[in-house]
Amino acid sequence: MIPFDIDSQTLSDLEIFESAASERCIFSFFDFTSTIGGKEQLRSFFNHPQSDIQIIEERERSHSIFAKV
Image (cartoon, rainbow, N blue to C red; front, side):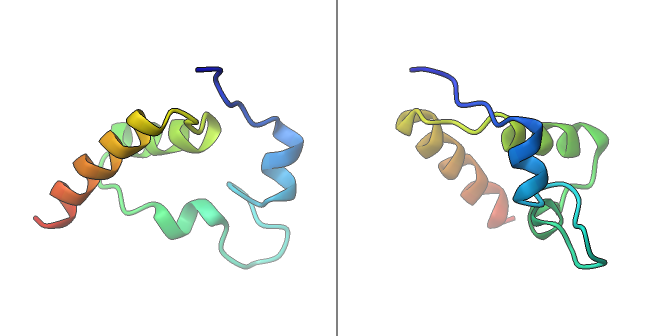
């Protein structure tokens, strides 16, 4: 599967990590991490989204396990 990378202009236009106004950015709606490593991993997921359905489904299963805790 070809990796799907997002360029910095697209990240800026979509306000993934920074918002032009004082509003919350997209990343802040998903960032419920409690460790630096978790925040870095989440940021990596946003910077390099997956297009492989098996990896997406695997992540979804693992996230649902943690969401039940």
